[in-house]
Image (tube, rainbow, N blue to C red):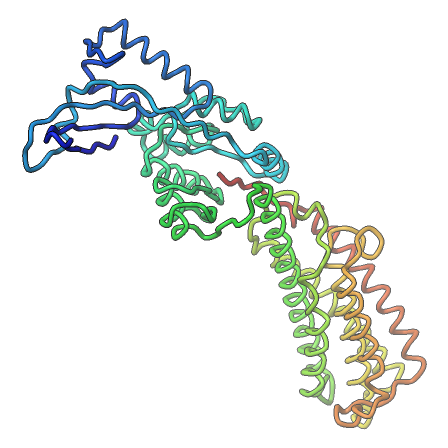
Length: 454
């Protein structure tokens, strides 16, 4: 409720109160109709309550208005909001946006649970839910939350779809209860009462027409009128997250494999396996091939449901995919040592060149295997920038031993017999990595629990 005291030109003072009908009814002993003020009998009170409920069931937000004549004095307080005369109702129709229903269905298809947290009463909430195709189910009311402990509220909030008659503190408490249940919670609101919940949600969302405090409390402000932009934002965020995970898998597994290969080769070679400047060149070219990863085409299955950050999944990729790359590094070592006689330190440059080219090409090709859960190039294709950049890096790396830069980097031309061996190595490497990836996925790596947002 909110009350003001006004003064007429005749110096008469009047306290005017507006607020939730339930609160105003409790302070009214009389009502005015047709210019007549009469006592509020139980029968009449039932009638005015019935009218209020009828308006609410039709989707109107209803405020009751009451007044009381006051004697002049310096100050007034909440104790004066008593013995009021009910004057009537103000009914506001705020229909849901046309895009609300389709947006709710789209979000539900993508694994997001929708919950309605509102200060309106349960009748208005049910009507709005029907209009947007949302099953209201059992409604949890704010007054019922007052006596609940935090565990009890967490269990109740999990089951309820609509939580009505909520105070700002109630909304904040519900957000914290859902977060305590392990959910990532997004909250959308535009009013003063939404500010606490916006601040405590994992993602606070408001609109450009919201009150200032709501916009200041939000993380994201929507500029488009259609609520379908919420689903578009969710999918775009999941694409970014999926590509970040792929980049980490690629970089971590590749670095682990290279470290393992470098360590092993250093133990038995009479010279360093690769010169420092060659390692830098290899890393630079590999990093260039990964630059277009943000443009990657993400499979629909990878963004269909929420995906948490899973260090166990990344660890498995490192421990399984990394040694696979080392296996083919060692096969290249054997070929360079026994086929091309690189035990002789005088032929160290040939060994360096052979491993450099093999390492660069295998790392670049593996991008296409790790970027998708499906068969690369057949069931799922990378974006054009990734393909073109990868081909350019591979072509440059292949031509580097024959270029004017070779002498500066310590490379020498490779014999023709090297290339068939490299082709077999690449084919076996891609096949085995795809098999290991499929094994990890069958074991549960990459499966994710569905989290929800309110």
